[in-house]
Image 1 (cartoon, rainbow, N blue to C red):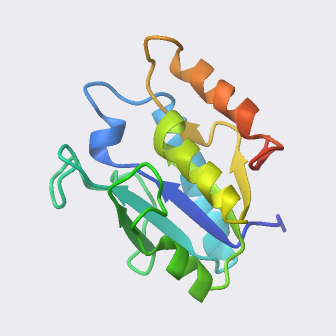
Image 2 (image 1 turned 45 degrees about the horizontal axis):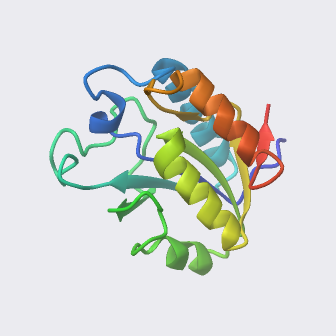
Length: 167
């Protein structure tokens, strides 16, 4: 049996993030990967936390704010609302993790260079042991790099410094 982290954290896989005028990079593959990880964590009765961003574009209870339908989400899964790229900033995430005595996290979701990067670095600074599957985050092409190059760039920075990248 695969040794998993204490909890799986899925960041910002929301309709307004994943379908912002176009579909986010490797969407179908990421959904398959995330749902596979959800099934593994459920099989070992480990917590699954969905982080959900809200702002002027992702308004609570709007379609854009909703988590994507493709996720294998269940009622008892935990959801944390955030208003900042850092999933810990002014949220109850740290309190939830401490109450459940969670020391290690597997991170996945969107967007690589924003909420994923910020949360990875902050969680590392708080002392959490972190893992991420290769291509476990996603983003869009930008003026400087393709989405694939952005993801590879950040994975190279994170691996062995902030988290253990699982290939």
